[in-house]
Length: 95
Image (cartoon, rainbow, N blue to C red):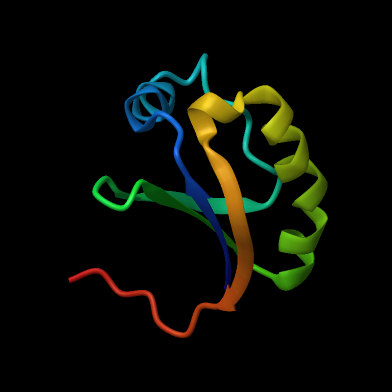
């Protein structure tokens, strides 16, 4: 499994939270995405969007969809993207 981690600063976390709770207002995820997680650092003004894929190929194929999502969600909502990194998920356990 692979994780794409996009870091953003600024934006409107409450608006994003509302979008995630309403299926009609959130953008469609890229094909092949298995799980999505958002981590918020309110004090630091940053957010991590983590999207999980079964394979690196599926993750790479989804990149154009991620770019088009930037056109669908205004910068004042999503914030400014600082970086995108990819990680191999070594462990994923729920206890």
